[in-house]
Amino acid sequence: MVAQWLAQQPCSAGVLGSNPTLDNICKEFDAVEEDQASMYNSLFTNTSKEMMCYSDFPMPEDFPVYLHHSKILEYLNLYAERFNLFKYIQFETKVCSVKQHSSFATTGKWNIEIEKEGKMKMDVFDAVIVCNGHYNDPYLPLDCFPGLKHFKGHHIHSRFYKTCEPYRGKSVVVVGTGNSAGDISVELSHIAKQVYLSTRHGSWVISKISYGGFPIDMTISRRYTMWIKNFLPRMLAAKITEKIMSSWFTHSNFGLEPKFRQKPPIINDYLPSHILQGSIKVKPSIKSFSETSVIFEDGTEADVDEVIFATGYNSTFPFLDDDILKLNNNDISLYKYVFPMYLGKPTLAFLGLIQPLGAIMPTAELQARWATRVFRGLVLGGLKFYKYITLIT
Ligand SMILES: Cc1cc2nc3c(=O)[nH]c(=O)nc-3n(C[C@H](O)[C@H](O)[C@H](O)COP(=O)(O)OP(=O)(O)OC[C@H]3O[C@@H](n4cnc5c(N)ncnc54)[C@H](O)[C@@H]3O)c2cc1C
Ligand SMILES: NC(=O)c1ccc[n+]([C@@H]2O[C@H](COP(=O)([O-])OP(=O)(O)OC[C@H]3O[C@@H](n4cnc5c(N)ncnc54)[C@H](OP(=O)(O)O)[C@@H]3O)[C@@H](O)[C@H]2O)c1
Image 1: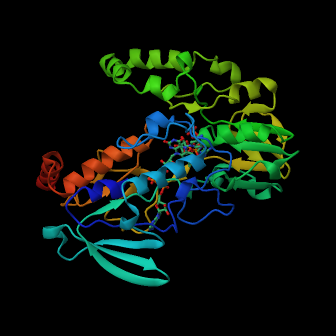
Image 2 (image 1 turned 45 degrees about the horizontal axis):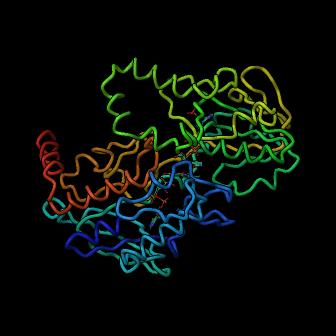
Image 3 (image 1 turned 90 degrees about the vertical axis):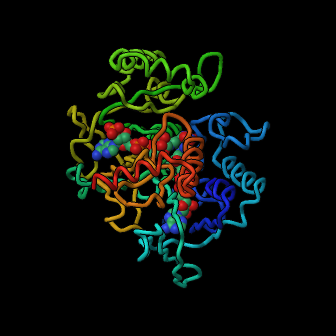
């Protein structure tokens, strides 16, 4: 999609990707590849096809509303073919470093070091868009779990979870209450002896299906609802949101009540019923591990064989120096989540470093459209901002 918006500018464009094809996150690799996001084989999107397609290319009519990840790959390939984008993409080309060119202060140019077929090469580019994804580097806070090193069972991060088969007949603890934890717990509960879902702060859980059978993101992400939300006093808006989030079931009865009211929801149609069936038991945070069991904060103990840490991801940019982008606890200071501040020239943009309430693709498309126009100096807002930042530094 970046290629699509770059291609519409009168400039030469190139997209460098370390993959051999467009497969990236959407392919079922049994092994987990470096620099690649990974996903379990059973994954279906939690955003609807109508809300996640690019504005210039609707999803095919025969696609279902919620898509298996293989369908997303099919869509991306159709998109690239439709707009003849493959010619811009250099596959199997890894970006190793991005540094300011000696003339950066006046030209905004960048030196890019790339690795292709085992050979290193340096090239100069007028502008750079970084979209290396932010689900590649697992966040695994093992220090938070006393006794884990004595635990004799196995533990993995959800990035390495592919299928439930290895967990047949076992007792498994899934740590976290994001969408990964929800999906994996439900899948495991069909064949595991027992699944424990350990939650630190709880989470709203909502269904994919909204009023009248419409996809939930079609009813939530509307100008009208956003307008009302922004118009109302914050406390009142939060109260109404809470009421909507808890309208499906009373979260406190399921041990899932969020400790922070503003927590983004997870979307999972099966989690509440599997909790009611007892195949998933909700537990608070883990206090400690013994050799064969887990002790939870409420004092209960469970014998377990396996632990899956569905604890999320770090955003990392190994090819960027710290002085270009300072990362503070996964918190990145970017103007409108796209442009790094204090660079002096708006020729470096980041895409997709956001967690929208809904699909990422349309938001990333808008970011790409904006960034490519800022590069060409067509959007004064960006330039004014840079002049302002330069003035105050
Ligand atoms: C399990 C899971 C389920 C998800 N489900 C949904 C969903 O239902 N709906 C939704 O909207 N979002 C979903 N997301 C989020 C969505 O997948 C991501 O936001 C989206 O893939 C981001 O796209 P991207 O192109 O920025 O990054 P990615 O898809 O991760 O692609 C990054 C690319 O950069 C390449 N790369 C990395 N480093 C380098 C380098 N040094 N040099 C060259 N190339 C490099 C990688 O090879 C890769 O091809 C999900 C995420 C996960 C993990
Ligand atoms: N079906 C789908 O479409 C699907 C499936 C999976 C993932 N995704 C997407 O992929 C992205 C990543 O999701 P994710 O679920 O892997 O990660 P995530 O949303 O970042 O969730 C991480 C979870 O780990 C918990 N956690 C972090 N550190 C912890 C600690 N020290 N102790 C206990 N718990 C800890 C967090 O708890 P707190 O909440 O308490 O901080 C949170 O519940 C999201 O965008 C998600 O929507 C989509």
